[in-house]
Image (cartoon, rainbow, N blue to C red; front, side, top):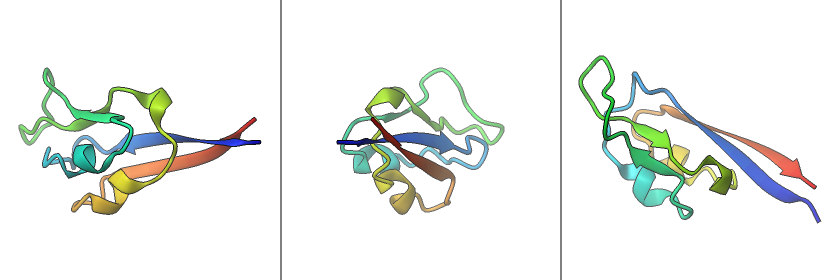
Length: 76
């Protein structure tokens, strides 16, 4: 049986660090950057556990700025 895998890509320059994607992710893939900020001065969301992503797209659905893209693929 094939397992779904995902890859979450955040447009860090557009991210305002609202944290909605972090709350929406059932697998704790995303977290706010604690060391880096974007050009606007916001701590942005980043994938801290990329291997846990299943490609469910919950993070992308709740992002008010549309700065998250999720890619999905089947893995054997």
